[in-house]
Image 1 (spheres, rainbow, N blue to C red):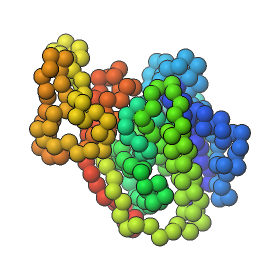
Image 2 (spheres, rainbow, N blue to C red):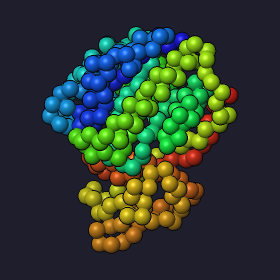
Image 3 (cartoon, one colour):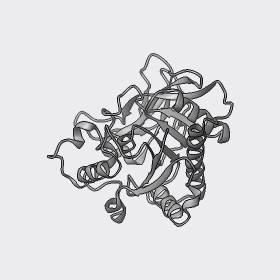
Image 4 (cartoon, rainbow, N blue to C red):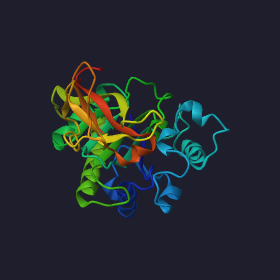
Amino acid sequence: MIKQLAIVGGTHGNEFTGIYLLQKWQKNQALIARSTFETETLFANAQAYQQNKRYIDHDLNRCFSHQDLADSSLDSIEQTRAKEINQLLGPKGNPRVDFIIDLHTTTTNMGPTLLITKKGKFYNQLAAYVKMHMPEAMISCDEDHKTNDEHHFLSTVAQDSVMVEVGPVPQSVLRHDVFEQSEQMTLLILDFIELHNKGEVPKLPETVDAYRYLESIKLPLTATGERAGMVHRDIQDKDFAKIEPGQVIFVTFDGEEITYQGDKAVYGSFINEAAYYDNNLAMSLLEKTTLSTTADD
């Protein structure tokens, strides 16, 4: 039974959609109110927002492993804020809040995506419910083999959580369609939890298509770590499309094409994400999977 839920926005200060959705809901709390649980909101990284940055010192959404939260020597702006949020919503391992929805946007062409970091029938049914009411939604399982303690995402302060990830939208920009899709997906999650609490989950499809994270790959780099190329035009904006072995994925600044060297077909997401350029990450690679709404898999 989920009794206390938090919706978090502004984990990244230049992802404006979640911040302005929080403002909307704070003015009209009836939109996010449900009868079986309490809903609160949290603006995660106001300092980064004020400086119009994703983060100031460290990516806040990478500061929430149990080990990092317990390390008092980690005291940058975001590491300190993570410890504050852990006290507000957690503490992780014995949290005050049962469920967290963390709102994000992406510069990539992922559309409305539900990011799941945990396995189980509850999550599979949630995914199916969202997909049933929002057919354009994509379901992505992000390192769902890890324990909650291992996960470094803010949402995993709670025992149960999801992230809403919608794009494309530039950093520090609001787009009407992305705003609407983010709100629709969030309200569907709230509706599902209400139905689940009441034991009134409707009949769902027995399976739902999803994608599971495998690894991240980097842009082409020189021997000294400088960028040597970019994402090839043929896969730009092709998030969740199949990438075959031998398919061109990069092109160097000299015009050399670089192919995918894996031994099986994969699918890309976060393709050419602007926020990941600080680590030279080009994209995530995923495998296609099927989630069962009748079994805990």
